[in-house]
Image (cartoon, rainbow, N blue to C red; front, side, top):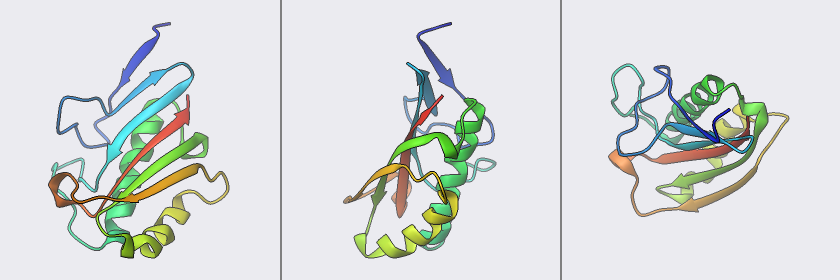
Length: 127
């Protein structure tokens, strides 16, 4: 088995820069930050932070499944918000994806995200 395996799926957006959707290494899956890109068009889903959080997490789930993992195996996420005033709305959507096995998490406000998204989420999961 290789020490490092690049993960790719058509069910999530292609990377928009020089990085992989995810990398499996050392028994973990490291998923790159996901914004609300529609995998079929590569375009940002327009809408509020709830809609964008949902799409970002759907992308994250697709990548994890392609890696042989799942949302239930996520141990840590980082949530980047354009506006921390969206924290509660993002949390409402986030909770629908992480019901029982809630990972550790960091949430920060940032000045700007790729494609002017409202939210970006990355994850580390057990492989």
